[in-house]
Length: 250
Image: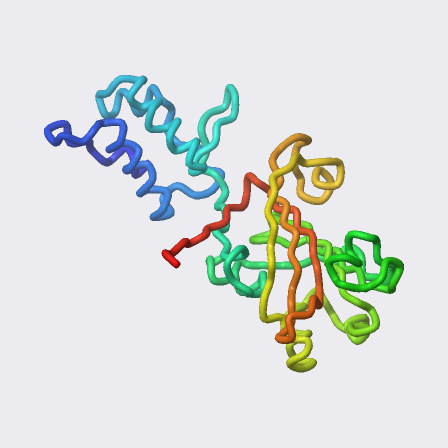
């Protein structure tokens, strides 16, 4: 265990728990401890570094709270699976590009792909009439084989019927739309984010436990004419996703 080959510097005015935390974190980032690996016990760390178990526990608790580690009762502390820090909120970019940029392999499963009637909510978002035909696309998306999100997308059938002949497993929806012309190019997206609890479908599709957090996004994509072209409802696993927003002075 490479972590056990390190030392703490007790002469510097840096808290010992923080030094230990940084050592563990460095080993994770270097890949010496991989996702799912068991780290040394509190007793082992306490004896190795000649510090109290309270100090060790403080370091471990902070890493658990920050999502780097997770605990399994009666088994130990493990390295967490990575949370893709996606730019989903602030950038119009295909899911595949986001995940590959993070060094992970994306994949998509189409669960439903059909024509149906627009509900009142969908009709309002797409600025069409309730009951008008819409294309409904339900996809489950993965990073390194781990399901991250279930995404339900609606598009006006009259305008986007050509999509019914497209492969939405291998192709990006936004890229297919953009190839059709400027009127189909999504240039702006409005997103609303909420937090909710995992329900029956989340348990089935995302391998989650009931009641766990879901990051729920409602998105409306607009073309260059500021007309809505698609709306979607995305349910992201709260334990496997995080989103970053950069705020600058206006």
